Image 1 (spheres, helix red, strand yellow):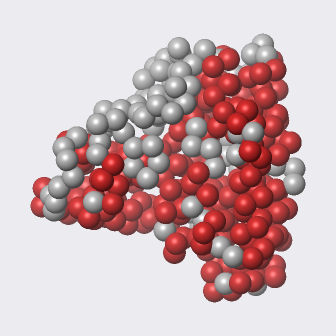
Image 2: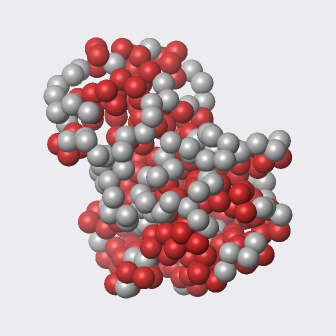
Image 3: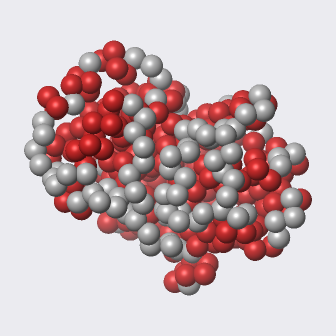
Length: 345
């Protein structure tokens, strides 16, 4: 059911285990002493973007601002103890992003649109995942890809919508226009999340919200966590806009390839419609996002122009890391998910 509230996923380590054990009880003050692992820097010595325990714990904290979880009291959303834990996890996550993403050089606000174009053009090439899905992937592999993307696509445009009340003037109008397209212009059947559900159903998959959360790896959760981090914090407003702009500027070609891949596999027009609609809808927002939204924001807030480019760089880097994860496993003949065959119905 589209409106179904998901259940808490299985824990992936000591942090998520302790956190989930707390969440199934009524909201209470538990203090950091009951989560001692958070206080040891060595716990975060490895790559945070690939840390299953940290990424899942952070994802669940963020999900309380979306649908929540069955059996978890809604008052946990703003519980001071939980926010304290989330702040520590976010600090480690932001450190991991800063290590993985090269910060672009500062640019003048009036050059923002061109700077974004140059950043996209200069992005480090990764594995050609869209090309593989278009020409070589079998149906099981395409289903795996859809499983990964379901973590984000079933949210629709929600994480970027948090920015609307924080903007004014041309940037706000531009974002509202982009979001209106993603929400189907008021027509449920054209909402991107609903079109994606159709794709999932046509592939014989469970289209309920959060159905595959247990199967996706840390890097998939990190992609979603980055958008939630930027969306929930006003200090990251510029980064959220840059992230969205980079996504708009790089989506047309991959989505066209995904559509062709589904047609090659005989999935039918209905299964491909989500990707076809993405190609059509992104034709105009690409320039709107770069010029009106990001350029307008940089002109209003010149000192935050660098944040916009950093957010765009995060989107491009995480997209590459995700492709590397998926393709490296497929080359070895194993599933890109946490359980072999988890994408199968």
